[in-house]
Length: 356
Image (cartoon, rainbow, N blue to C red):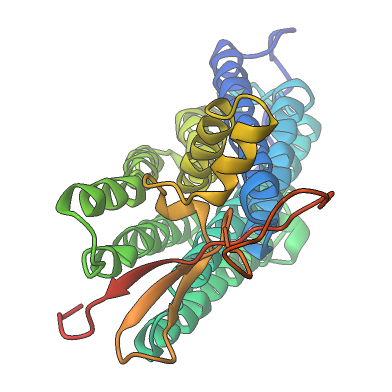
C-alpha cells in the first residue's frame, strides 16, 4: 500500500460480499433496536429510566452509525474488492469511511459495556468490595475505550496518511493493534459475564431461582462467542489486500456490536413479561385493585430496585420497589380515593457469612 494503486477497474455494482454484509447488518440492527425499545417500555412501566438505559441507547445510536457507514463504504468506497482494482481516489474514500466505521464500533461496544456495568451497580450495590470492583472495571472500560479510539485516529503520523498511504509517514502495526484490542475486548466481556455470579448465588432464594438468575446473566456469553469469532477472522486479514480480506471480520464486528446491545437488554425483559402477566390477570376495576394490594408470589428479580444493606440487621437484603402495597390502617378503604400509589417491600436476605 506504499504506492498508488492502478487505475480503477471496479465493477459498477456493490460487492456480493457486502450485499451479505448489509443484509446481516439490517437484521442485527433491527433486533438491537427492538431490544432497546422493549427495555425502555419495561423501565417506564415497572421502575423508571436510569443511566444504564441511556448508555444502552447511546450504544444503539453508534450502532446505527456503524450500519450507515457500512452502507456508505459499500456504495461510495466500493468495499469488498481486491485492492489492485482501486485507483487512488476511490481507495482514499474507502479508507476514510472505514476509519469512521471502526471508531463508531468501538464507541458502541464501549457504551454497551458501561450500560451493563451501571446495571450491575444499580442491582448489586451491596458491599465495599463490589464498589471497588465497579470502579476498577469502569476504569478498565474507559481505558479500553480511549485506547481503541485514540489508537485508530493516531495510528499514523501524519493522520491523513491513513487514507493517503503514498505520502511519507510513520505508523504502528495496525493488525497487531487490532488483535491486541480484540483480546482486551474479550477479557472485558468475560469479566462482565462473571461479576454477578457470586452475588446471585449468595441470595436466600431457591436453587431453581438462583439458577434462573444465573442463566439470565450468562446470556452475555453470546457476546464473548461473537468476539472470539471476530478475533479469529481478524487474524486472517491480509494488510496487502485490506479492502477484500477485511469483509468477513467486518460482518462479525457488526454482529458483535448489536449482540452486545441485545444481551445488555435481556435482563430487563422479564420485568416487562411479569408486568404484562399481572395486567392480564386483572379483569375489572375491583380485581385490578385487589391485584395491586396483594403482593405477587412470583416476583422476578429484575422487576425491582437494588440490593441495599438493612439498617436493622447485619445481613444484606434486597429491597425491591416495583408495585408496592401498603395500608396506613386496617380500616383503610379505597372508596373515594381517585389515585393511589401503593408500595410493598419484598426483601431477600443475603448471607454475609458465605464466601463470594
